[in-house]
Length: 575
Image (cartoon, rainbow, N blue to C red):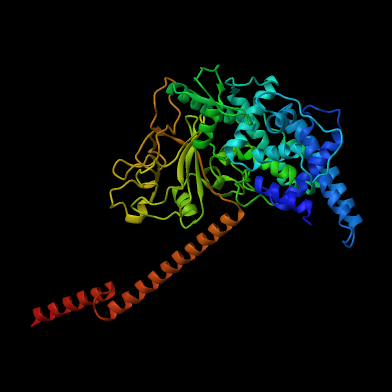
């Protein structure tokens, strides 16, 4: 006889990207959700996120209750129920203070209900066998899959549709839809904070006990001018993607997260409104990790005790640890959110290698912090003209008269406009450059400083000179795609030269990567110091050997010879 439970898990496992333990939990979560709502509730609920989280933990309670063969099942059950109460408190805070208003309703409608247009969901009058055939269960699993496990495009569609619903609560079938660019960016930012809270929940509870009742308020999205300006910079780059698509004057495609794709003529949108196609294009070029804000949120909402799937890339909010920054604001600043969207290497723990505000405006200290560091690094410059820009590289820093590195490297402008200039397809390999004057004593006639892109003869595209007085950044070269690093003048003219207000370099990539890279830097410094000591000993030994062989004359002996010479001359005269 075939076990219906195993047969159901086999069928669903072939259809959805979940393992058996995850499917078992989702099936029980869906059953609990149905049971709590009953047959009278047939529409999307604004408390959907809280319901999903609580019923997910209730499914753990069911598992603990069923496991009667364990040593202390009642203790496990009590612990799970306490976890559910604590988690409910965190989720309520996230819904009320972090996420946009009506997001619960919008998410459920976009991911689990919507089918071409707003429709009502039918709840069966009786709760069926959780492991039997159930079209509602399939719809539920499909919604979870698209919002977390079916790639960035599916997640972007749900985020896009949710933005539409939060504004209008309706979607017209087969009609081009648009959202405000700032609304889309704001949703991603808030989801990233919510993901951080859920993924660090246990650690944060411990810190809450020490900090007091106001602890959670520090995570509320900041509305300061600097925070809003950074989000506005992302919004501008998203608007440019829409303008670029509008200028192409080609047919585009509009689709809801669950509808068939409909081809239509590109129609002009209202100012600051963007289409799904523009969001997708922008995410691919500038913010490939943007869609992971929803995927990561959904994972830690449903599977708080499970590690993130290794086949997927989570959104990790950068953490500065104990190091301060003159460029970034508070811990979960919007500037750090922008960086985390650019590359998976920019998520997780950062380590400050150099800061001009802390270490002084010294090229020697800057290069000493970088040389030998084997992990990915981020160079961030704030210039006196108001721009913030820089470069990322994953290659080890070294002194060289030539360019080096690989294509895991890019230039960026963070503010007042966010853009990423990645390597060109088939372009030059002039990725990075580090040539201090001390390396050649200035005899090489080459630019002395740190640079990215460009050439040695015409100087790098982004160049930080040793004296910090002749720094410049151009808008194009043969290594990276075109794009301005510096904001224009007030008259709209392009700029080339800049004066450094502050510069910082950070080791990025997470704890393990940073610790390994710092260890390699220590080893490199020991080798360098050992070589200097050996050179000094060799020089001293060679000097003494040459001296003994008469190849080097001491000043004292030269003076004695001069005296002897004068004495001989006097004797000759007397004779």
